[in-house]
Image (cartoon, each protein chain N blue to C red):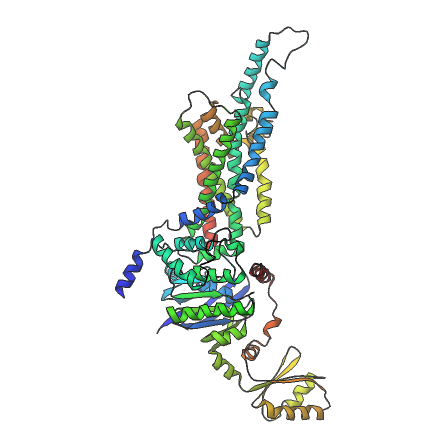
Length: 295
Length: 331
């Protein structure tokens, strides 16, 4: 009898993290096994890049070929110089397409992270959550697996968007190195972690997926447009500036542009803000979710 | 043999609604214990508390020797649960679902594979194990759910309405698996159902629960005997008048009005029926319908709850859950 029990214990892995990867992998499996959904979810930011970045071609607008003032004989290269300078002063770079593409990286992360809650809504509705709660997996691992899978998904989608953007003509600042990429991903990671936790907390209380969708739709575009994804804060009306300044997208955009495009920014402030954002939201989100399913 | 489960004043209150009201019962090791009651009676809430999904408002229970409040992790380690809903992941295959469960119990891969093979074989899903669960029929799904809950070799298996929404043939097949588990593994089985005949046929002991309270507990045989004698059911042109007339008749144990019918408990139905008829007709009443029945679980149920099983109103959430399960069972 004693032998039997001993043998049973050897068969079992009971680290505090057990089940975390199993559950995370379950979420990811559903996603990478359904390439159509994967494809659909990255179409939107790619459309934004293609339409906004290519059609609204500010670079062409400000270059001498299209601008000549009748009656004034200004040399083309002067106009070009002025145009470039305007672009540079407004956006920090003369390359608006790259500027926008960087913003789209944050957008896809925002968009994907917000969906962290959807699978929780379904798990609750279908009774899967109840079953999970009867297994020895700790409650916190159930929550964290949802956040983790959402973060991994966000970063993979961001990478796909980045590759597409490069193919469409995004260019990095000369002398870019691996640390710049790591920095950009760190910013995306922080934002994703915070947002995923927040939306998970909302989802765990949501009675239906409709209400979860409603919340998502309510905040996604406003968050996008009140950030510096399309235009810098300095060019915003005064009432919008304070909103943009608390929008986490603004800071992750700043980091990505600073790291990848060499746009001037204060990385210490940016990262501090993102770290606080991620820490506060994930602690609040994870603890409240944990409390909810433990009660 | 000790007790596998012991509920002590187990209570759950949602807001003002008392779902489970200070219930006490024991389940012996190795028995099939049927928990019988209408929708909304508190069956699922009780299972959820015993399986540590819900925390009791008051009282507690000992499951496999562990307190559900103080040692929930140990309880979870020693039990298997087949919930009312189909919880297998539809996007994954049967095999993947088995491995997922194994991961949740922290069972090592090679051992998990061995067990998964054995269990899928037992529930006859070996052929379908590499197909997505989406393609499974209701019966297959329920069998998979049972196999999934056995991967950790639990000592107690909880099944919440395992046969709901399945056709008669599949229902008896599911029960055959349950009986097999009891026989081969000596497993204790706690099962809720609202099919009275299932409880009668398969359960060693049955508890009847309604409005959060346990009304009766015992083996199906004991319960049927407790109802006593035969039951004559009749409807007359004036039931109240009929009760007055029959009250003092010798041989009548009890008269109750249930669903516009009179339920008269008598020692010997065949002997009493003519006497009752005579008395009523003499009293100027018309007898519209009449039947004599020997006690069944239906009688037991009616006796203790004062209602018929099929007249139950389920609350909307449960109807929704049931319909969804039915839809998937059929699909």
